[in-house]
Image (cartoon, rainbow, N blue to C red; front, side):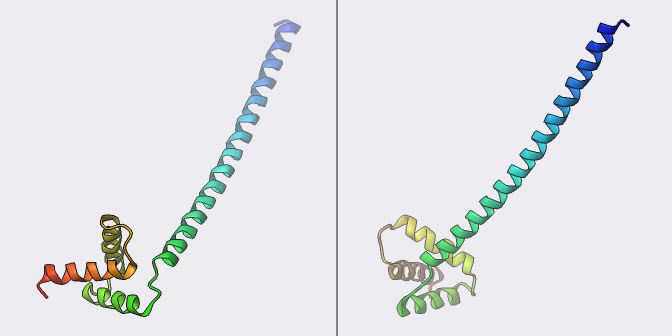
Length: 114
């Protein structure tokens, strides 16, 4: 192989090494961005859950009493209580929180013949 052939081969190899290094750097940066994005999304979900809990936490005495009654009917299953309340909120918008509790409790008692 002549000088120009060796030169071209070395240049080609250097180019490939550079491309390989750039790809490794890009991959590392991508992993870092992905990890940071996931951490950010986890934080947003946590904040959203906290905000949701603040919004829908029973605040007045009557609602607290109804909340306890609902949980008693559901054997303390908070997740089911939240699903039933969310369903009532969706089906009957613009009602008071007390009304939703009364509706869910009334429906449960009706369906269970209590």
